Length: 84
Picture (cartoon, rainbow, N blue to C red):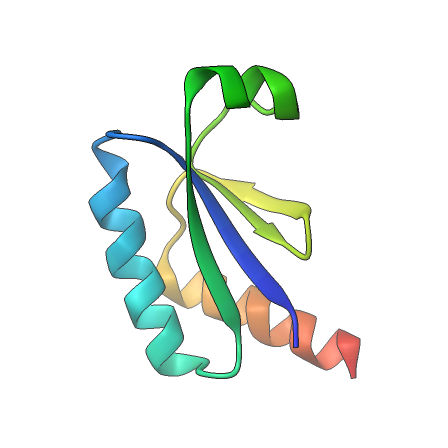
């Protein structure tokens, strides 16, 4: 099972949208391990990533921003097929 992680600046307006997206994705793909990580400005410098939200699968950046749910579901299902 792959791990989906979404990085969001703490307190960013997009945080609630990301939480909603995660809830919808978990409903569609209950076997996925999905986490949200709130990052501070100094974390962005440390990890070398400056665009948030950032969506990572197993530590690899898939996209930044808030994607459409159908697009993200398609990508996650493709990842599942590739991993099998």
